[in-house]
Length: 497
Ligand SMILES: Cc1cc2nc3c(=O)[nH]c(=O)nc-3n(C[C@H](O)[C@H](O)[C@H](O)COP(=O)(O)OP(=O)(O)OC[C@H]3O[C@@H](n4cnc5c(N)ncnc54)[C@H](O)[C@@H]3O)c2cc1C
Image (tube, rainbow, N blue to C red):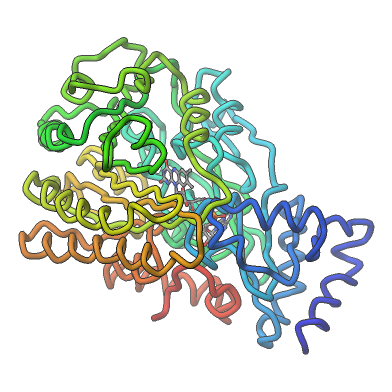
């Protein structure tokens, strides 16, 4: 069956589309242009699907899979699954000439106080979720930016969050990823729940398996008490960055490391910004949070006392999940080319200083590129966080408490012109590869690559280790025996090399 013929099957399916033609957006329509233009990276928006399907219920997602599944298996069409479209990896949530299943209309967060959980449909944004729980005095582990989507984050770990450690300590489920149930549409179109008691192997596989096992239509997260807290961002001159690394290393190696803190430190270059503050290179940027209502907590002082700072940009204050997520959302750029790449190392001062020295000359190479933003960020995984995974049912990431504490190194890039793609991407890749090589020589490289921050040359699924890859492959064979999500959904990182 040709692509056009298969599309007509979709369009004419009375069972799916009776009086619901607004569920399909075709090229050159307002909905299509808005949705396809709303990815965080133009690398994704440059891709043109044949159609975008916008279901409003789980049942419609199920019908979509039942209808399209057989056509996909014939090889006539492929599809992509997207939520907010925040992962910048090209093609991970969009598909040239195929059908993009856009879950953004699955909304309506409902806190369930009797269970201590929050039911979050896959199309929600974290900002809306925080609003829905905050007025009840609750929090959940989610992205720091309010515009970020649930689906991509929650199907690939959900452990880099302001409140990740706090939620581990306080939530019933005591899990870094904090998800207690997934509602999933399988390759057969059947809707199942995956949790510790039902489809437990699928539950574990979804904690890191990305888009390989099904379409998650609802995430139930464990909630925890969360009030106001202290935190924000501070900018300082680059010479102080080494001191921030040392503070991070000291904090993470303390035997009584606080579960209330979340710190990330960056060297951040943005052409206009650097010119405005008169620095010919990257600025230091640290974001530090203490998730209790305590003003200027002593535990953050090694980070916040750095001098001199650019005081006008210091946003440390008493805040809450909603406002902090709004602040971060304002900092994110949209409608520009964007890419992420990452690696993971042990919390070792020489390794982190060496990584910084690898980044600096690479920045010099690309900083004159039009619209260049080049950020180099260290985000910790404290041992306390890694320890919570096993009691909460496990995941497939392959991170062991004995390997910790760890630091994720993220390179985040924005730029304007397609003609600069190659130099920008190859320069950033060379930084990650050089850090990996250097850390390997020091014995401090950790194989793990965070799927959400990975780029196309990386292998996050392989980085989970053989045993975990096999767990994922076994789950795929069991829940998707014909390999719909392997062959029919080519975007992202697949399970069978
Ligand atoms: C401004 C910004 C801030 C960020 N902040 C954080 C942060 O604080 N912490 C952090 O860990 N990460 C953060 N990220 C990374 C972000 O969490 C990931 O890129 C995440 O994948 C985005 O989720 P999404 O729902 O928008 O995914 P999309 O980009 O829509 O999809 C990403 C991948 O997930 C798959 N997928 C999406 N939804 C589903 C579903 N329901 N079922 C099955 N598969 C699905 C897609 O097929 C695709 O492969 C940030 C990114 C940006 C741009």
